[in-house]
Image (tube, rainbow, N blue to C red):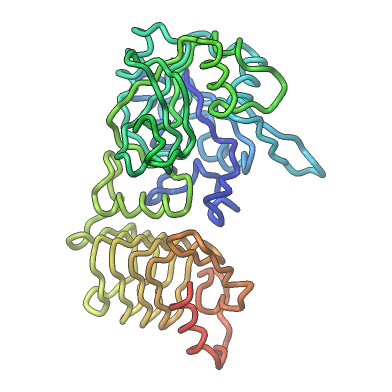
Length: 387
């Protein structure tokens, strides 16, 4: 069976991570989120997958290649052009991306699934497909019930008693919401759907295709399903996803590495004297990371591979990406460190290099200054308390 993964977006709400990592490659404890989607699709018999790519397309294609090592076949549809020898992404929108693939050659010749490439899900796709077939639908949207107080954060789906979609509400107030079923970005289509999608232009599934289906009275349904859906749409979402894995709250995402003590997991060849550090789980420490004596790490915390945590540094409830060096005395609470950026859990970021703080948080592959700035203590206090 055939499927499409939407992977062309720039991921602007997940910056600064998406400056250099496309959303589908954002790691959940070292494993890209799109890899989990491939596993789910394969489990339910979807083994021919086209991925539309645009922003940082080479990164996605280089990692997943033809899909062979993931037990599926993958092809790519690039949206953009070359300018001065560089790939420039020009996404066509979710429905426009589907249409481009179909116009190239009719790939979607039977029922197919479309998924966003930035969510962790444990959906029973087979059950959703059965509902779609029984209804004789041209399109089926997989919805998820949420508590009424949460509806204002999502797109709400309004149906009749048979499940046929009557309307959508975009982030309605609690009082105005006509339903508690939300759009999860998981869709099942028949090839006839392309009658409703124009060629050669940007076109969106949710904003343009779906309203047209409702307006024309097409057999368009929603199937509410109770499943785990962790959307990595914004930095706080990513934060919660990593925490959820470490706390054992997310299904089918095991903590990698070896459990060296209760709640403490490590990759290969981690350099640490366990008797001289204060580490309280759940904590994951990536391979080839060095933890100096006197460091303190409080979970839930993830420290990526090839990091260096200096003596006296404190890391609590934080996510530290690979090759990060945390200087002596640095205190990071509720922070995400990615390259030259330090981000709080609301998404507010500081560029430590531009702020001349890169001697406190820097790349482990970078040479350190021979002497540290005299203002070190004052700046450490600012860094610890103001972001």
